Length: 147
Image 1 (cartoon, one colour):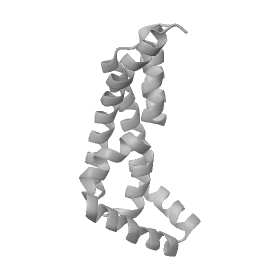
Image 2: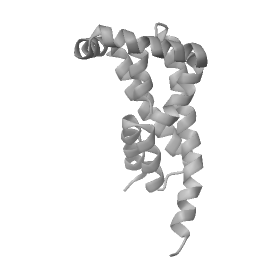
Image 3: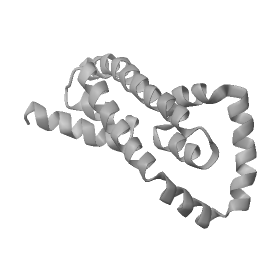
């Protein structure tokens, strides 16, 4: 497979989540820089597409789950954001849960979505590179061990 095909696969896998893009880049033998870069670009692309179509998605969520239930959960989330601040949630949650769950929470609960989106995009980029650099040597070491 040519290099462009490998980058495209990592980009598409990254568009479905960080935890899919990084392992696919490692499996294809890409350098951690390229694995992190194309995983981040794929995740950022999908997050921005969801962000642009957010109003229709928010209306669908409200119609499906009801506004009363959302309001109860909103109070819990507001307490969480007051305790940990929006920037902490935007930077930490993408590495733990992937980029889509924080984006969904953003649509429903957060008023200042642009600020949270910026922190979310930075968090996606940081976690993509951290995971690529962290797991590449681990996978290489495990693959060299003979049983």
